[in-house]
Image 1 (cartoon, protein in one colour):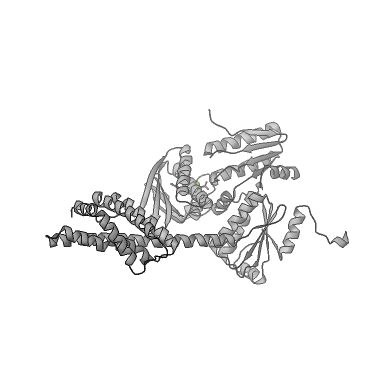
Image 2 (image 1 turned 120 degrees about the vertical axis):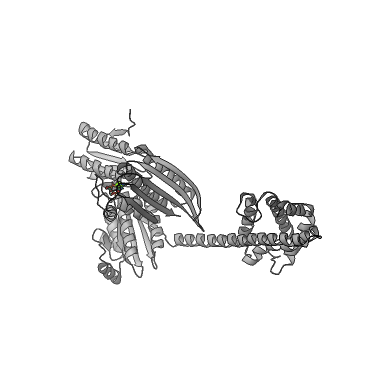
Length: 117
Length: 285
Length: 134
Ligand SMILES: Nc1ncnc2c1ncn2[C@@H]1O[C@H](COP(=O)(O)OP(=O)(O)OP(=O)(O)O)[C@@H](O)[C@H]1O
Ligand SMILES: [Mg+2]
């Protein structure tokens, strides 16, 4: 049995808190689980809290971007929240700008953003 | 040379050697008696002699980087650092080890009264050894000075980058003076850090006080804006002077994705508006 | 240049990429890299370890702690006996991928570190070396 990142449902919003240094398969698993859960639950928003993540490389970045586009196809908005400054600086240097992905400073602000959108 | 001869000589003559050496140090030209007390000097010298004797007994006399010498190097390191901080010059610091030469020479001469050849052999090795230790002292001394300078530079950089909270949810970074790459990255990092700490969704970077912007600095600015966006905050750049605007166009730096305002006041107005506030004159209410 | 310490990690599966990241992080902390620099070198290492696994068919990662005068550094070497890279400048350019990636790994890793070098021979393998100085 493979470990999984838990998805929390809060009304029409799904909340995922990533706390481990994800290996690639775990990230892909999350991508699968989230898309299934969105269509099952009819959620309108997804919050991915990455404030504990110490690093985002091109693979994880791509998974975040994919989740956002897949959710958008299923009519849900995705907000990536809590990216640390060092991680953000590194991602920019790497050349990944995550265009089209919504971002917020923390979960609260992410919620507000979803309400507005 | 069998190291045991030197070791025996030292251990037999220990107290005399210590006294003579301390005396040498005190008399040496440039000894800072104002900076160090005799008791302290004696204690330092005794400690050193013990370690020195141990190293001579166990280690390779010509390779001070070998294991046996590490307690000695450690003690020299500590002493050089301390003296560097206290304001000794490099020469004054190196005197510690170098002034051991005369008393050791005397001890060896006595031990080899009947064998001048042996004496010369030994004294050559001891001389070389002490020179090496002297050079090592200088090395550590300079290194610790350099560390102090680097630390001061880092402190300066941080002092020169005050990120201020202008309003709830709005921070500003007024940059004054020339931006080089090192300073820009320190400045930008502290801005991003403050965005997180204050939970500010808007950051104003004011470059009114910056005389010139080159490609590298402009790129840094744009990267900071991109990083802030990834974190969930928007940047406004204000105070781009006409010359800088021209340079940016010449350098083909694309600012179209960034909000720019002529003055810090206007930037603040825009920021307040985005946060759902409005500035009006009180008489107009 | 004095090498103070070294360690070799095999990369055979995905879990090993995580181990490489963690080992590089540990060493970057030891030489007192700033948090940003730690993150940069860890991210570069993650990219290169993944390339090593996916394109090189696995291999070895060597970590070395360096000391040059006042500054400390971490050097990480990624070596595989895979198919090699026929056109290195092309592989380094952003956006080029022969697989399903975004083609950012090599070029990005280069931007994230102080020294970067790559040697590759078709049919023999690839070696990428990066160094981050404090
Ligand atoms: N160790 C290697 N052995 C053989 N070919 C390699 C190796 N590393 C990289 N390459 C080649 O270089 C290309 C570019 O690599 P790069 O890491 O920049 O992009 P990617 O891995 O394709 O995508 P990304 O890293 O953005 O997910 C790869 O597609 C592959 O063809
Ligand atoms: Mg890659």
